[in-house]
Length: 211
Image (cartoon, rainbow, N blue to C red; front, side):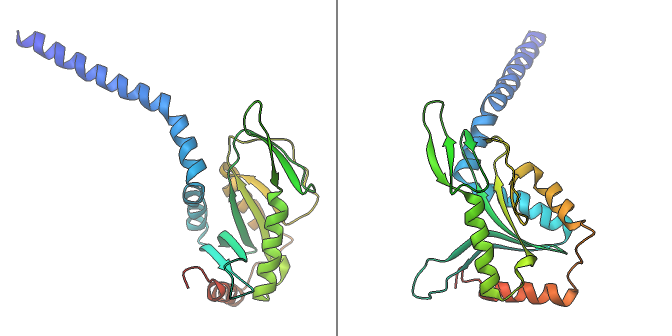
C-alpha cells in the first residue's frame, strides 16, 4: 500500500511538473510579446542598463527638455548613454508584424496584421531631430551625439540602407555589440575625464523630468 501511495505521489508530481513546463513553453512567447509591447521602455531599460553597467558608462533615463517653459512639449528621450567616445540618444520603439522602411522616407509602412497596415512616422528622422535639439540646448558638439532607435527583435524589417552616419536603427539584442563597435573605433578620440564630467553634469541639469 505504501509503495502504491509513493507511485501515485510521484505520478502527480510528474504531471504537475510537465504541465507547468508545457504552460511555460506555450505561454512564454505571448507573455514576452505582451510585456515588450505594453511596457517597452521598462523592458528595454534592462538591456540598456546592462550595457551601461558592463561598460561603466553614465546613464540618464527619461530625459526631457522644453524650449518653452510654459508647455510640456519638447524633447523626450528614453535613455542617454554616455560612452567613452559618444553620447547615445536612445529612443525605444516596438512594432508589431513587419515594417517596410526607407531611411529617407518621412513615413514607413507597418503591416501589423496580414491584412492591415498603417503609416508610421520615420523613427530615424524623429530621433535625429531629438539629437539635434539636445545638442542645441546643451551647447555640446553635435558630433558627440549618436542617434539610436532600438527596435524589437521579432519585428520583420526590410533591408535598411542608412547613408547618413550617426543615426541608427538597432535590434535590441544587437545593442551591446553596436555600442562595443562604436566605442572601439580608432578614428575617434575618447572624451577626457573633464569633458565627460561636464557633459553629464550639463545634461543632467537640463533634464526637466520630475522638476
